[in-house]
Length: 290
Image (cartoon, rainbow, N blue to C red; front, top):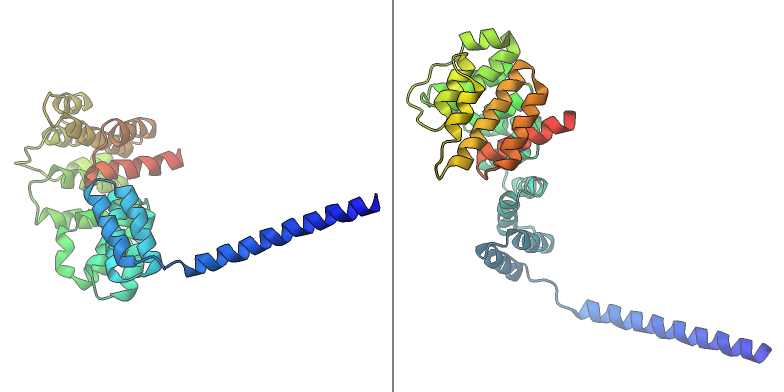
């Protein structure tokens, strides 16, 4: 029995030595493998992006950044993250890029947009403010900052932003609507209606009906009827309709009704443009509070 016991122990030891030896050899082989070529990774990422595989492209650009975080890699990775809706990744890439090129003012704007889309409204305002400190002449045109003000509950600042924007964009119902929303939080709905900016010439569907609703002259049904008219852009019209119905209900304090319209704009009629994504951001923000 004792000899048999020693034989089994010897066999176990032999197996262990064999495994350890194989592990050392595998580790040596790994050390001999060439490091990933950042340039090749970026080229493959661009090829994947041209083929429409943005997620695959983003993963490759992430590997390129890990191998060599230069401006070329960070620029491509930030763009692919933005395109794929990976806003945290875009924020991280843009932050690294800013560390290398802090004088590039447009990066603060881009990172502000990424923060807004990530639901960080105060962070977005902070980046937009830095951007406008560097290029103050851009302030009246910066309506994105006003949306971030509203999301961050900075209603006085939002009101001022939309009033400034009105001077350079006089025919935009959306600007009047966001101005209304900020004033409603400061002075109530009646005060917002008195201060509603008059708009003429916005022919987009269903902007006239949205303006009439905010003015107290139209109905929610009018907005939906106009948006539901058969056309190639019907989905887009309904996205806008439900977004502004959500915001209107929010101004009136009807949070449950607002959440319903946010969901429709964000999911049923989702669109890839800035306002479509704004609907998704506000929907997620409001759901988190529900």
